Structure formats: structure tokens, C-alpha cells
Image (cartoon, rainbow, N blue to C red):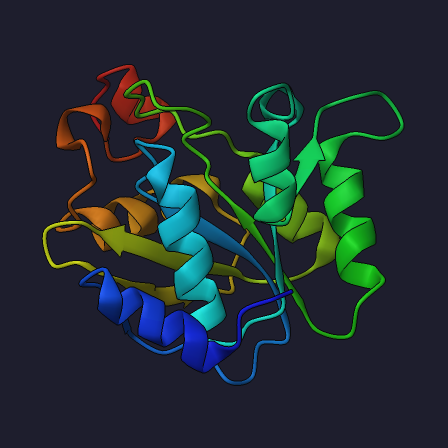
Length: 195
């Protein structure tokens, strides 16, 4: 049984959270980058936020998460296991899922784990480019106790520009565990080279 929009909104209020921002009305398919991701609780909060907006979506998660004792929870949350295998990698699976549906949003946490990293996995960008869909910036702010959407990136040509846009969008967002969250950096920034 899936929660309705109103049920998700009530549950968010019950735990002291609210949905914020607006989802772009003209976007029927997208890759939603959801951050920060520093705790397992983020999956539950994120799922409630997405349901509160009434978005048809699938959460993409590492196949390694689908082991006991987490597998039942992953399935309950509707998380789709992905991994990079030749001829059936996560990019191709995402493109297939988007093409099979008239309206679908795939949610990915590009930090790829709870350890702090400024090198976000670029798989979300490869998925969006291959499927020819925009990237929507989703967030969960534990300080403000709100989550939702901060914007949309339609021009996917320049990976560094996208990284800078994400860093700007998330600069004032507080993670559940702030010491585990780093803003993404471009390759040049990570090498500490002048721009």
C-alpha cells in the first residue's frame, strides 16, 4: 500500500517536518539528486517528502544494501537495486525505467554512502544525459526540518558547471550528521588548482 499525498504530509507534520519548494510542473521525467545523505533515516524522510509532492518515483540504491537485515526495508521503501554490470549497468537500467513510463522520476543520492566525500558519483549525470531528462535538485534540511526541491538543471553539457550549481544549492542545507556532509567539488577544485 502506497501513502497518499495527504497521508505523507500528515506523517511529515507528525514528525515535525514539512515539504518545501515546488516541483517543476512541466517535468514528467527526471533524475532527482537527493542530498545530504548521511544516515539511514534519510531514506524514510526522503520517501515521505517525495510522496507529499505526489511524484511517481523510484529510489535507486546500491545492490549491496539488499542483504539481511535491510532487504525487507529496502523493498518496503520501493528502492530499486542497481549495480554496474556490463550490458546491464545502472545507467542503462535507469534509462530503461524512464522510457517504460510516461511519468517517472528516479531518485539517487550521489554521495554514494555515509562517509564524507566531495567527489559525488557522476552516475546521476550519465543517467540524465542518456535518458535526455533534466536533473532536479532535491534536499532534506535537518536544521529547518524541511525537504523538497531547490531547482532544476536542464543544460547537462558541462559537468563542472553542474557540480558548482549543486554546491551552491546545498551550501545552506544541514545534514542529519553535518560532519559527514561535504559539498561536491569539481575535479580541478579537488586537485586544488587555480581556476
